[in-house]
Image (tube, rainbow, N blue to C red; front, side):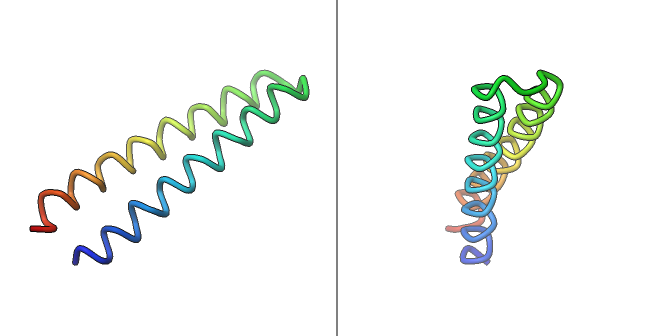
Amino acid sequence: MSGFLTFLALAAMIATAIVLLMGLRNLMKGGPSNKSQKFMRYRIMFQAIAVVLIVAFLVFGR
């Protein structure tokens, strides 16, 4: 179980980093601000998922 949670937490952290970089890239290029806002909303979502998975790993990984 803890191996599966570790994999899911790692995947969520990687997704958070990718979405963050995509949003920053769009912001630096001067792209539409709506698109940057959408990327940042997705980043918050992935970050929340990662935190929940890390907490679940700490609770159930014992």
